[in-house]
Image (cartoon, helix red, strand yellow):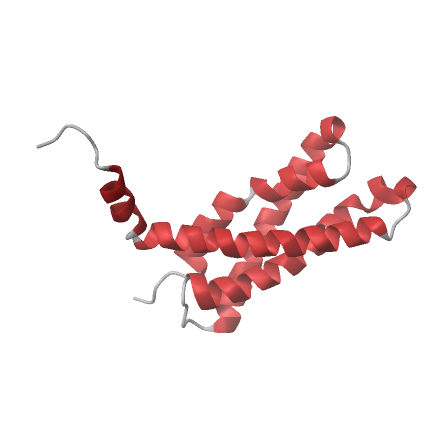
Length: 147
């Protein structure tokens, strides 16, 4: 037996795992939601005077986050997890997980705002803060396979 790892074989074994494929799909869906979130946040900031940015950061972050979250729910339900569960129940669960991720993002925003200031760097830090929690809670609670 060889002591060296066959990298192509290892990659094939890893990518054949359902959880890995789901995480990659979740990431792709998340990236699309991320873009939607960024566009909405940027539009809100562009339509607001600079002097108001500190005051409107939290509402702008929340609105953009929730709109991106709705698109993520639809695509994750259909494509990532191919769920056939009750759409309203899963929608409520996904919304609950999104609300938890939103609170985490708002806490991170509050903690990092003094060093990053309101704007896109803070938005990025807050948005990325909930990704892993979001994936695992949705995978094992919202979209878990029916028994």
